[in-house]
Image (tube, rainbow, N blue to C red; front, side, top):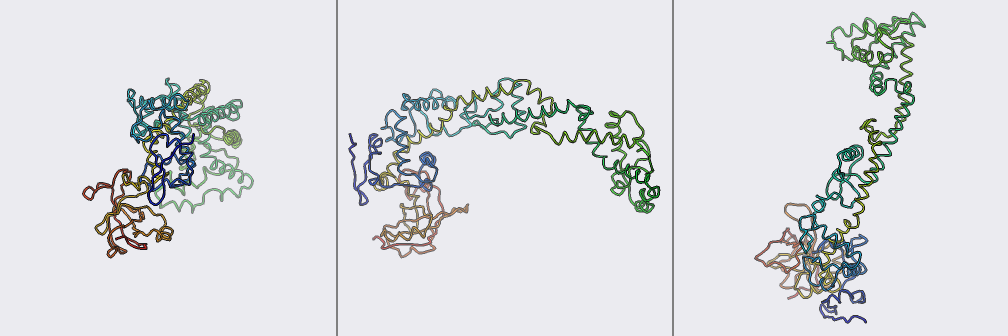
Length: 525
């Protein structure tokens, strides 16, 4: 049977009267040409912004008839009695949720979980404020269904340590409780890198004498080797040149003028000019001395080279021959080639022993099981948004319909319409019909057809730089003192749904308003 509608005439046209839950449920049957509006923005309304976001399914910043109908259908499907929507109550009774459907049952379960988590497990009602602090809701839970596990999700110290190690290697993400944690993708990434790093080390250990001649100390020794490599190489090349031609001996050793340049300088082992001189005296077929006759700027580096590279690889020596030098170069060249092919660099900071311990301990499966437990709660946890949505619909949906399907709030003046931006105080008058305007040019091109005196005002708070433009309707008095440049006060009234304040109780946020232009056919008397 077709729903029987009732109408009221106001503003020069017939508007549908919304009074009962049946009226709300049946709105899909009402021809859209009988709706007062077919679209409204989600911004610049004196209304619950969060609820408008919920209704705006496609996120385009506008709400249209299909989205309003979808909101009604959903709200009616999860409430036992759609009549509850007409009351606009701030609290939602838990027993008002219809748990006979899977979605309703999930909503009710999630609502109870929210109350339990915030210390209100015995409450039979839930409010928007109860859903506002996500961190508080999940602060005491081990799992919250967001697909991210913090350290506290693990019950044993070993697994907690591995999770901490993973977060050292990959950028942690924040879970719903506000704690840093890891996701399944990050766990997979970490263990893939760890396995590659372990394999890279295993390849080296299979050719230990060639790639890791000093075992785990090879890398530190290579760093010392690289420090002196160029300087020792320079020394042996110079000696080879003298062997090639004896006449090269004098030019390849420092000239007297080089020493004279240093004579008036306060010398130290860090003097730059000293470091550029040859490592030792250049002679044909001369091995590199390791104890005496070394350039003072290089003594410390050669001592470290002798103790940490030569002695472990070649034994105790006082001189290093050219052949021995080339042997060392070949050994470290193989190590450098291995380094260039490094795999799993992400986990390198943990060290190979720690990586192998993690891989051998079965922690990947253990952490994966924790993630599965967390994800198993996804439906209940994701329903938190739905709980919040239902509470907001329960409180505000009927009000929205009376400002969208009809303009009942505006024409009855019992409540301010949601598109009324606030009140303008100017020239000893208060204008309650004020609208936000984004483009004065477009707005004013049609404003003359209204027959109302409209004053466009630029509004700015004293302590801020943000500016808004409003159009205020003057419906009484004269226009003699309404001129560009006049100043007034605009009371924004953001979030207020009742009647405007009286002149003696200006308790809403205020901004300075300056009259910037007018459009009118005639000013009402």
